Amino acid sequence: MTDYELLSVMMASFAGAFVFIAIIGIAVYVLYGMSHMKALKAMGYDKAWAAWVPFFNTYALADCIPETKENVDIFGISIPGTVFKFWWLIGIVATWIPVVGSILSLAINIIGAGYCYTSIYSNLEGKSKDEVKVVGYISGFVNIVAIVKFFTYKK
Image (cartoon, rainbow, N blue to C red; front, side, top):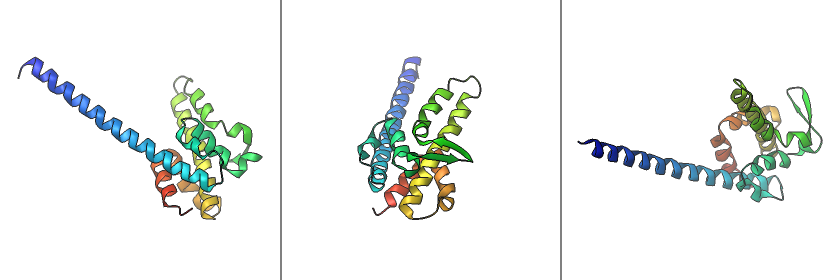
């Protein structure tokens, strides 16, 4: 096999892998949008279409939960609801911090999304937050859990 043939095979392999990853990414995005739109509608949120808009979908998750009308109490810290709705923006800004920024951003995103998912699960399932807290925070880290749970709701 010549160098040219080897290069051609490698380029074709990378192109195939890129197409495969792009298809998986689009499928996950569509499933995320559909499931979260269903959950936002079930929560009575009037802008359920926001599930399809990047960044606005995380704002909508925080905006649809009743706690953000007042103060949100996370791990004993009281945060004004208006500030909590922008938890995702704090996670983005945290990535600019050298060395620990990525880890801090991940923690902020897990806590913010986990709190939102916990509240949504609690409301839609009629359970206490303590009963759904673990799966809520797992959903904040692994979004496929939230996608599956939202699709299983009858509402």
